[in-house]
Length: 541
Ligand SMILES: [Zn+2]
Image (cartoon, rainbow, N blue to C red; front, side):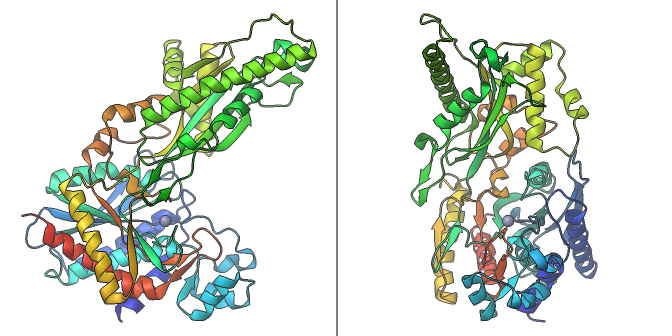
């Protein structure tokens, strides 16, 4: 079987195991499958490779990871990490084709009679594309890494660096997999005396591109979710002047921060989205004729340079002025209605940090773990985090109007190639050489891009900031350490430059998800080998 057929067959087999993130045993079944393949290959070539299976700490789904380390006969410390995710997004939108969403061969056949968008129809006719959930995102990438790893086993003279095959779960969810892999990576480096030269991912590279240019990402964007819990004052709607509507406070904050140009960061390649409001809720259990006293609002914020501490500063600034604006408006309106005397004082809003509130509550005997234990385990992580904060606010009993500021999970640190460390400089040179190689050998135009805007696990290969920057996050994320965790010490210990040498495809997460098999199985394998070889040349003894 040639490489194209082998990669195609492996991709099909991996796709046939449905593995939506954090749902059922699919992710573990893919890991079982990979373990079976690796132990088969290992039994034929014992001695040079170690196989691992390690559990994710405190994972409610009982998931575990397979990993395999191949040691180069030269005895070098230099190691390349091959990372990818085995989970997929749910197969939604397939309509009558749902039964075949995870069977790419059959699905691709049946697509002929589906009502496809024009471009998808053209791609189908070309014969290059394989449709199906997980084809491009990213079972094909896993197949590519596995194939490279197996080549090292079969032909120990082929590569001049160690290879660590390191697939993870939960990428499409909260990256619990990658976060759980951090201690594994640091401990392995220590025990086996490894030096990680680079972490390669194989996410589809077309995301965010247009035209024939394929982006080659040397960095990945950060993401953080600022949260505000707003407390007004309860009152019967007939006595509105006694109350302060939390909905007004919340909407004032949305007005101030959603789309705020100062929240939007840029690189030489382009501009990223500003803060976007992702949730705006009145927090009460049942309807009543009462002015809402509590509301929550949270945002998605993409970061290129900002740290959690800086985000919190900016958020505090916006929240203080939003509270003041809302309370002045309330005053004006109620005075105009004749419900407040002209000289009534405007209430002043208070801004608190979640960390301080949680600390005050703890001193009164509040136990966040107890709150968490009483919640339905299947509740969304964001809802759980918010419930902890609400319970703390109840415990402290502080009066509104106020805003408690914190963060919701998940958090992704940005990871850039700043051309600062030796490793970053080397990997950037390799990426530049790869651009030339792809053009010469395959007629493919690759272009280095600084930041992948789509949020990936590559965020967790280190932290480009200070310990205190992470402190602001940990202190202010309700449920930190139980509901959501990130091993800060070990994250700071890791410092691995990243590069995405990806497959090609279109419409990730849609029902028309499809993989360009020609590029992915004929070009990408060579690009991947080129990068590993160049890294080996640049490795030091
Ligand atoms: Zn992906």
